[in-house]
Length: 113
Length: 247
Image 1 (tube, one colour):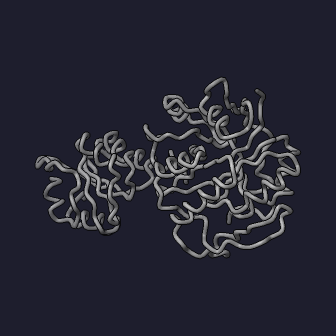
Image 2 (cartoon, each protein chain N blue to C red; image 1 turned 90 degrees about the horizontal axis):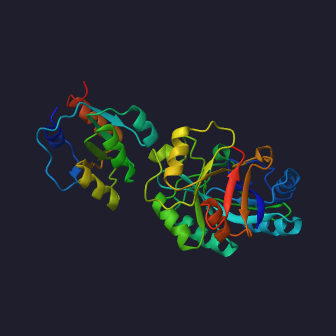
Image 3 (cartoon, rainbow over the protein chains, first blue to last red; image 1 turned 135 degrees about the vertical axis):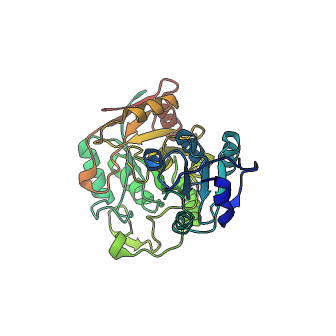
């Protein structure tokens, strides 16, 4: 599915400054806050939902070729996290909703099904 | 210079998850029996039992390093060590300001006793200590350094409550002074490599919550004297100082 189309439906604020590449595809979603576990189990092409705001989330996204991170429950990235995201071309959003709500919404939109 | 026998991570009866036997006379006589000379008192998010241990330590000839094990916003445990009681109490004020004010449920979490140097129960800490503060790991390291202390990433070889578990690896620009590993766990080669690459070294501490959790000597530091400056040099293997562990 195209990331831009999915994000239009979500109640999430785009925090990275650049426009999202309209051709960018996502294939699934992974939820997790223990980065060691995310490294082990998330997949390339996932949207990643987390409450972690440390800049290590960008390194993990780069490692797994995850292109979009949604910080849930209103979390905002630390300054250096946002800088790194911009440099690496990772899309970061923040949603006031919980992981359960955002993941559920993405599921009803057909992501990963 | 000489070799000092250390255990840099020991809990007391103040930590809700620690045993009733973790009071100064019993801990210090066990430590002495085992041949450990220096212990750091590191309760969860609090230093209220540091004074009692310092008093008893002076009496029986065990060096007490005033410390605390802080839980960061990311659920990472960091061992914070200082030279003086004043420093650790100043740090405690900061931590208490950043710890959610929630009442302890003794039945679920355990009791949180402040004791005197003979181990008599003096008062209970009402607020729950076993929780994350809202300080990030960077803020904790910076805060401890600002007060003149040093900061060690606790038990990074465990999945729960560790820098490695929560953040996946050691952040490149986090100025920690040392890395603690668990005595009995297998060594993870990738972790050891990364500790080296970061210019850091590891040591082991008991993280004792009960008397039985205190170990015979496992961690040794070659230093001129036992203070934070020397310990920092030993942890970072600078100026001829170094720290070593059995494995």
